[in-house]
Length: 310
Image 1 (cartoon, rainbow, N blue to C red):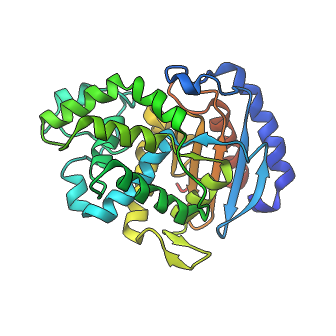
Image 2: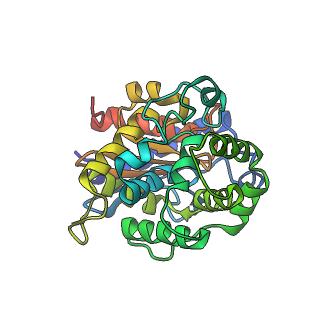
C-alpha cells in the first residue's frame, strides 16, 4: 500500500509525531519566525504531480528558508553549468553547523564545502543570472511557479526584512567570500536577494509538488516536460542526501534514507525517487535546526512504506 492509499494512517502518524513538539523550539533568532506556533505539524504527499494525501492544516503558509538552497542550486546549474558552479562551491558534506565560518578559514582554496551551508548558498545565489535583485528574484519565483503550478507564490516582506536586519553573520560570510574572489558584486544586494529567497512563502502542498518534480527526474507530469534537466535533478538529490539536513544528514540517511532538505521555518521537502514528493511543516526545531516532529514523522513514514533508497 502506498502513502496515497493510506490517508488515515498518515493522519495517525502526524498525531503521534505531534507529541515531540514540546521538546523543540521555534527559530527565535529570526524575530519574524519567533511568533510561529510550535505545536503545529502538517503533511502533504504528491504522486504524479498532484496532492494525493494530506494530514494537518496543509494550507498554512511558511517560508522556505534553507529549502530554497535546493531550488537556487538547480537554477544556478542551469544558468552557469556544473563547471561554473563547482569552481566556486565544493561537493563535500560537513559536520559543522550550517552557519559556520571555520572551514572557510582552514581549507584552501577558501571556497564553501557545499551549496547547502550558508556560505555555499550565498555563493550559489550570487551566480543567478540577472542584472538586478528584482530580475534575479523574478526568475527564481517563475521557476518555483513552474515547479508547483502555483503562480501566486511570492515572498514574505516582513520575514525578508527581519532576516536582512539580523543578517550580520551571513554578511560576514559574504564579505569573506568576496575577499577570496568566490563572489563578485555588491554584498548588500546579495544579502537582499538571499533574504528574499529564504522568505519565499509556500504551504505543504506546494512543497510536496516541488519535491515530486525533483523525485520524478525533473519532469513535471502536468506538462510532461523536464523543468529541471535530468543530470541536474540527480545532482540536487545527491546533495539533499549528503548535506540536506544540516549536520544531522548522516543520521538522517541511516534512519530515513531519502533525499530531503529542511529549513529553520520548520519545513522539510523530501523526494522519494520515481515515487513521491513529501512536504512537511512543523516549526518546533531540534538543536540542529530541523523540525523535531517532522523528523520523527519521516522516520515513521520511511519504516512503514519502506522509503529508504539504501
